[in-house]
Every structure is written in C-alpha cells, then in structure tokens.
View: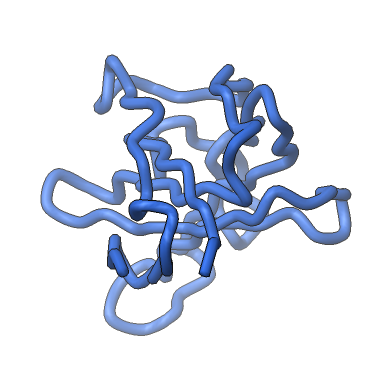
Length: 128
C-alpha cells in the first residue's frame, strides 16, 4: 500500500512519477501535457499553491465532459472567500495525456495562469 497526499493505492507498486514540471514557478496557461497513461487507471496531480503548500487531485481515467471536469481548488485563506479562491480544471484525460484549463478565480473575475500550477503527475494503478 502507498499513500501520496491523501490518496491510497493498493497493489500496483504505488503511484509512479511520470512527469515533472520543468519550470515549476513559471506561468502555466491552458495546455495538454503528453504522458503515456495506457497502463494506469488514473493520475494523482500535485499542484503548487505557493512555495510551501501544495494541493493534490486524483483524476480517474474516465470520460470528462464540460459537466464533470475535475478541479483543484484553493479556498483563499482560513475560510472560503469567493473573491480570493482560485481553481484549475482538468478538461480531458486519455491514454496519451492530460489537458488543463487556465487557472482562474472562483468569483468569475478572470483567469490567472500563475495559480495552482501543475508540478508533478503520478500514474496510479488500482490492483488488488
């Protein structure tokens, strides 16, 4: 059994690091990261909130539509504040890669490509 962030995998050797952002602090617009996911049931993605805090998001390899895009969200302080909460969506996932949206603000005030930048992508196998 392996634990990364708050995801637990059973069997399969635990999450395998497949991609590391070569410019972890650089602006990250909407884009597709090419990575071979054929052998995995999903991915665990590490996002950078700031220099000391990261968020993790597990995304199963399922069909993603505009109605069910997984998102990582930073609540914006001690309590949820829509004006300072940020998000980034995973808009597609396939055997050949993952597509990310631009980062944005929950209050709809615009986009910010410097929030919740993907840092690492791990492949996850769920075998018993």
